[in-house]
Image (cartoon, rainbow, N blue to C red):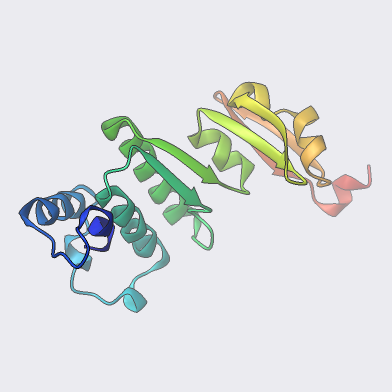
Length: 164
């Protein structure tokens, strides 16, 4: 019910519509099996899904997510980002998210904003933003960009390749 706090009157209790909203989100995110578990017993991916559920229960048209996949293994990263992408489509949500994994950011985003030193270096559609020229402005890392079916893959170069 924490996601409904903004909708409750001061010192007020949740009503039937609040409970219905929460139940809908629990079903939509397939969280029923987690309902009676403590947060400390949840995996990283399960925890992320519950945080997203709390945000959805607020019924905001915009979700702001800070590193939603940090600390997750690849399968859970994909699960969480697939969930967010599905929710964007089904609920017409706008998601603003910070991410350090540029490959995942590009694969799951419509538009990117690249920052360096607290300033916007580049922004716009992924194909126009995720370029070698722009990445050189935001990172000292050496990398190679690959195209995999229209998705830009950012491959960090190992030390031996950097020396060349």
